[in-house]
Length: 560
Image 1 (cartoon, rainbow, N blue to C red):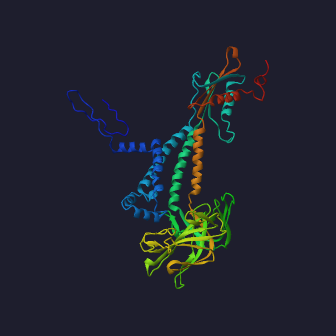
Image 2 (image 1 turned 90 degrees about the vertical axis):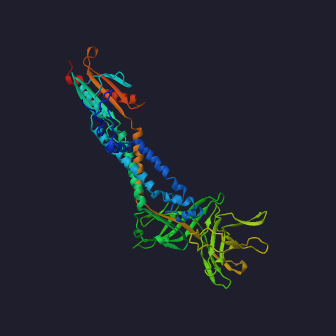
Image 3 (image 1 turned 60 degrees about the horizontal axis):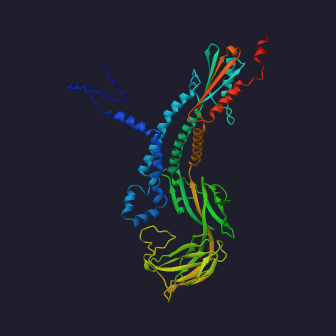
């Protein structure tokens, strides 16, 4: 007795042992090969591919919740310090390095393999279908959703040729692409049939969409390992060189070598801004810079919002701007202990800017000075329950003033923890007060010098400059990402809107009342509901039965 053995399953049945109820089959496992084949079929199914795509989106969420070490290492250190229990646990599972973690990479690779494994067999089947012949015309057309008929004086063979030409006619936008795959057949006894099929572009668009997804995955992965990005603040009159050490923050892909940076220089000459006087809305920001590339002469360039500058194979974006007071701080003996241009970050629409000045004292760490306060570009005095206060009423520096509080103590610069230069750690510091117990407030205008409390020295406001925040990005995969994104859109649109239709026409020599003429019947079938099927069939039938502009059949055969 022969035994059925499913493909890929070895020794499913073994010889049974005799028993009181007769022989019973014993089912064994499918074996390692069978399990591998089953796992591969599951992985390459469309269901699993969509699941992995959704899982990849969910896996990227932690990268937006917790700070990432590649972009903000100081925030990661701050988080670990503030959460001594949860922080190390998150660090061990890669929450601070999400996009380079093992589990994120595993999902990424599984999605890539799933798409490739899904595309290859479908491409093979699709190519075989494209090269195949349309299905033969059924014997009866009575049950098809779209039908039509007519009479013609042309012979069945001539009508078959005309119908073939009509069905193969190209699209209006792409005349070189035939609308239908067509085949005409001689069925004998003078009867001809034509079979036309369209919609193979639907599957082509589907495959193009999935190929574009694979291209996007490869492009994004390539960009991640080859890109670099740096941010820096450049003060008016100063510049920077394109080297890793010149940036305030710098991130790069694992395969990018910092030595490959193009050594160009960029200097900020001037910055222009325009605001609406009524609504205070920004109208224009323009950074005038001087770009010097290797082997070239200095060139005057401009950078605007959404109009980056191309430099050294990268794009330089204008991300922000603000004011930077030029300060000089002297101790009680008149010695300069700190000074320079200090950027203050805008906090609101009228550019009320917050900043911090730190004066380190190496000899006595408990006598260090911290100045924290605001720059008001256009000062305005308002009355409050606690007395007069200053606010800014316009973004432009029409009447700038600095309003500072003074702190004394240990700045914590020797704690080994990176600090934000725009924040003051007040844990080991004391705010200085006046004789009445109120916090000391320094109000100083450009060109003025004020005394620091408790004989700590003096502060001079030398002048006010502008600064810009620049973001330099280099990603060689951006062009490919755009191309594959457009391909994905085109493929998806084609797969959604290209109708799948089949049209059959039969041309039978007429008998009895229709002797000497040709009886034409037609039918159409579509995948799913297709309201355009019947109009399409009517169009093809009308074009086939349209009278020829050439001589008639009687003219060719002669009048009897």
